Structures are given as structure tokens and as C-alpha cells.
Image (cartoon, rainbow, N blue to C red; front, side):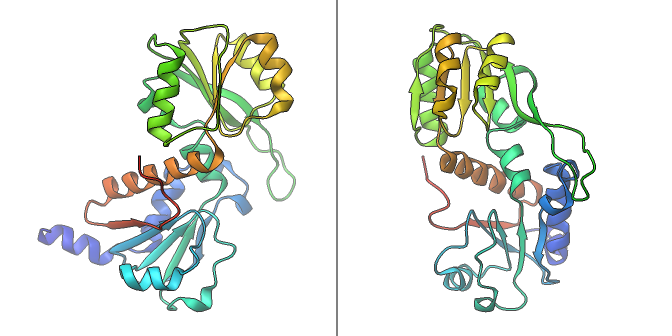
Length: 259
């Protein structure tokens, strides 16, 4: 570590990381109650950060063993704060993480998939906390891909996400236009078909959409919600390390499956 890096790390704090995540995850598009942010404030300098989808059972032991200065939790609601030292700060994001780092409008996943001409797909409309309308948010993304057989797409998903729940062949054996979406229903399957897609990647397979799948001949790969979260957590770790190369980032056991 050079002198400049050392000085920068001495001054990295919870507010710095929170500001980066607020900007990167576009939290201003969400109602204030859904934006996440600082769950437990602290001024402690941060050199070692722990990430977890849920508070692990032995959270305090993990924090002590890894000498963590702060935590980021996807679902912080069951954390037992009294187990932790008072200067351990906690950050959290739920919907912004799901929509930007799992099966939503996720440029990092689009790059990994080799998608081009990426556009927003589907929209959800939710009011702010006072009931006022907010701009719609994309449910997912649609893009063009290199020619490859469906079996190669299955292999890609299995490697990138360490598995999948279900893979259904469609009419097109070589899908080149693909949808990635965190929601699966008949309306979205038909929209995907109308926009030229023949492969639909999602988290959970919804049987209510089966008639639309059969009607359109859409191929579907359901990855599994937990796997998509684990992928997002791995990506979050990479993003934080890229932003602050001297920051040590640890992922809690049970929050990550190694390929």
C-alpha cells in the first residue's frame, strides 16, 4: 500500500460507501422507504467490509474473526444489533440490489452475456411513500446476442450462476435475442415474443405463464432466486474492490457459492 492509498483508506467511512452505492444502484428511482442506505450509523474508518444476503447465525463471531469494520446486508431485518460492537456500521439495499445486480436492467450481466443493443424491458409503476406517482422502473432488459445453441446458453448459466432450477426448450434452437427479467408472467412472455426474443432468463419459473410459453414457443431458463442473489453479491464485491483497491471485502459463508 502506498502512502496515498493508506491515507485514503484511513478516511474511508460508511458515508463514502453509502454514497457510492446510492449512485451506482440508482436508488433515487425508488421510494424513500425502499432506497436502503445506512441501517446503523458509525464514524469508524473502514478497511475490512463484510457482505451477506442475510445476517449469518454467528454474526458476531464472524465480525470478530475477520476483524470487520462494517457490514452490508441485503436483508438486515433480523440482525441482532446488541451482539455487535457499537461502532460496527451497517449498510443495506434490497430492491435496488435486486433490480440492478440480479435479474433486472443489469449492464454488468449484459456484458457477461455478450448482449448488444440492450434496451429496457417491461416496466413497474409504484408510487412514492406519499402516494404520488414516480417514473416507471424497468423490470428487465432485452438485447441481441451472438448465435449460439440453447444448450450453450444452459451451459453459460450453469457456469455463471453455479446451476439453475429449470430449462425449457423453445421453438428456436439458436436464440439470438434474449430477455433477462426478475418477473415471469404471461404478459411479459408475450411482450418478449413481440419484441423478437426467443429466450427468457428469469429467477423463478412461474407456472401461471405456461400457456404463454407454449403459445409463443419461448425458451425459458429459470436460474433460481437465491443463485441470482449470490451472483449479485459476487458482483458487488468486485465493484467495491474496483472502487477501493485497498478495501478488503469478505462474503459470509452461506451467502456465496463458488463456481
